[in-house]
Length: 116
Image 1 (cartoon, rainbow, N blue to C red):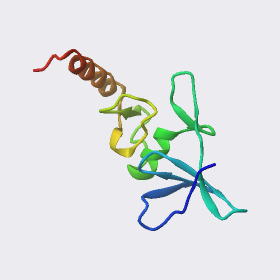
Image 2 (image 1 turned 120 degrees about the horizontal axis):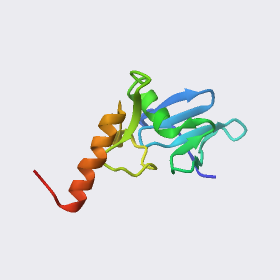
Image 3 (image 1 turned 180 degrees about the vertical axis):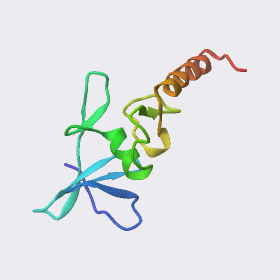
Image 4 (image 1 turned 135 degrees about the vertical axis):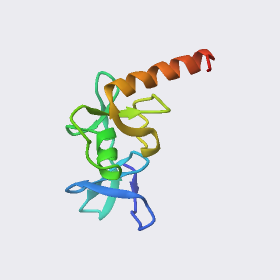
């Protein structure tokens, strides 16, 4: 299992007892016996979203670095890269379902070469 030493220059936040998340979207668990942080391999649900335990990785990243979900109507939006496994902070934001739908339309037009 890969491991890393967490130094002060590494951008991470503790999200649960023994778990940290990085701005790159990695989740690490502390191995007490070896005294190292090990990268946790998340599992994907049917739609491809990554989870560690019952928590969606994109939500963990946003909650750690952008703050709590503003309202229950907000969701984690992946943009500009719609790949749901890209959970880097630079690719995530809290926004509404309507804004997330608009993102899909914008990217579909971009992929078709339609501008304006």
